[in-house]
Structure formats: structure tokens, C-alpha cells
Length: 263
Ligand code: NAD
Image (tube, protein in one colour):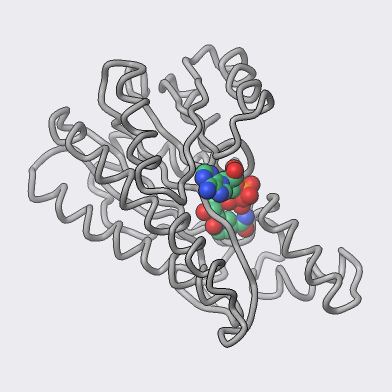
């Protein structure tokens, strides 16, 4: 379905980003994986995915905390294939949990930069190519925390709400052009990834609870299905948003959250 299209997924050497990258590669897209580390493992993840899917998958380093490197990621992806980046998934994200009055300033700045501003910078670099090609899909990975709040996650929740505002604005700007380009945000509930593992470990320490107790009583307390969302479910949503059937879905936050935001 996506043969000949270049897809960039930021922060995609693990978790949800890697799941989405795999799903897009299986549909035939040329996929650019990204993280800030540039290790042998990062390159192996790309070559393994290429071998598994038969797609062109490569790794490009870029620190999504740095505006010039966000734009540079898109420029390198365009140069690699001499073609525009027509599928852009802004997925890179970090978390920090603390009361507002104790929230470290450097953590606030890093979360706003990586979880929100990086999407502006990659979009800004990719949009001219999408407009010229007349077809594109921008998928921003927000969160149930883009639509609702919890205490102690001020920076993350501010960034994810901002991600939905950015998505809506881009959707309207694409619509003005009368092209076949959409922008949407996927809002996952809890997915078992490294980002959540960190929170489980912190909560075990803070409350003296077992891993199972933390998952049941803290992490999944607000997720009515009482199970984690599968990474594959997010990948499948991204593939659907890239399909022709999703052409008129634009500017939307799409929840994949086990009913969290139905509460
Ligand atoms: P993860 O930690 O596995 O993935 C985060 C990715 O971001 C990693 O690959 C990491 O290398 C990358 N990253 C971090 N800082 C970066 C930087 N400066 N430059 C480039 N890459 C960087 O966690 P995940 O849960 O897969 O998170 C992916 C996205 O999904 C995040 O935006 C997160 O907020 C969002 N999300 C996760 C959940 C969940 O429950 N796991 C729920 C809702 C939304």
C-alpha cells in the first residue's frame, strides 16, 4: 500500500515508534528509524527490520531536543531517497514525574523540546515536500494525557495537549491547499514500553509495592479494560491513517486507550 513512500518515525528504536516503523515497512514504505544514540544496536535494529520486511529501512541519528537536528533528520531522509518525506510520525518522547513546585527546570525544557517542539521542527521541514507531492500523512503520537490530566506530569501533559493543537492547525493548513494530506494525533492509553517501565520502577519504590500491585493499582487504575494497549494496535492505527480509506479523517485526536477517556 505504501510502496514508494518515504516514512520517518522519530524516536523509533524501541516501543511504540519501532512498532509503527515495522507496520509501515510491512506495507512497503521506505522507513527511516531515528534516535539520538547512534549505536551499533540502533543500526542492527534497522537492518533486522529491513531483512524481516524486505523494505528499505535505515537509521539516521538526530537529537529531537535540538531544532537543527530535527530539520536535519528530514533533510537526510529526503536526500537518501531523492524524494519527499510523505509520512512523518512524531513519536519521540520522555517523561518526568514531580510536583509542579519541585519540577526540575531542565526536565520541563527537555520534555517540551522533545515531546512537542521537535514535531514542529520536523513538520516545518517536511511540509514543503508534502505540498509539492500533493499527498502526505502526518501522525503525531500524543497520549490520553493529551486529552486529560493526572497530577505530577505537568510538562508531559502540557506537551501532549500542545501536540493536539499543532495537529489541528496543520490539518487546516493542509486542507487550505486542497491536497490529499492529513494530520492526526494518536492518543494511546498505557502501553508496556521502556517509558512505562521507568514509571513502574519509580512507583514500586515510592509506595513499597510489588510490580503487579503498581500495575493494577496505579498504572492501570484509570484504564477501564485493565490491560495494556498492544504496540501492534498503535501500528495498525498508523497504517489505517495512511490508507485511502482515512483520507477524510484529519485534525483528529484518535484514542487507542482501553476506554480511559470514556470515563
Ligand atoms: P520508549 O521509551 O520506548 O520510546 C521513546 C523513544 O524516544 C525511544 O526510542 C527514545 O530513544 C526516543 N527518544 C527519547 N529522547 C530522544 C531524543 N532526544 N531524540 C531522539 N529520540 C529520542 O517509550 P514509548 O512508550 O514507546 O514512547 C513513544 C511515544 O509514545 C512517546 O511520545 C510517548 O509519550 C508516547 N506514549 C506512550 C505511552 C505508553 O504508555 N507507553 C502512552 C501514550 C503515549
